[in-house]
Length: 101
Image (cartoon, rainbow, N blue to C red; front, side, top):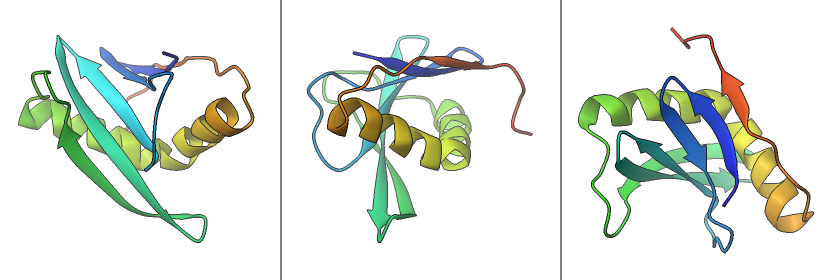
């Protein structure tokens, strides 16, 4: 279960046995939601949030902040997905210490 980003208390990660569509799990204070990244012809077209079964979802404020991060880093998240699941490479967590806004 590789962590890919840490951002002001948010942890962004993949599970080791993931499935399509490309998505990233986001945890914050014992809450977790999932963001699907929908690609079309190699370009990010949509980002959708959904609840993770069995987990308390992010609050609306947390979800908004997490979505802003996912939108800003979507291409890099996809690159890490491809490296980990397709190329079978190790991915390293990046800690982001500067707020997006």
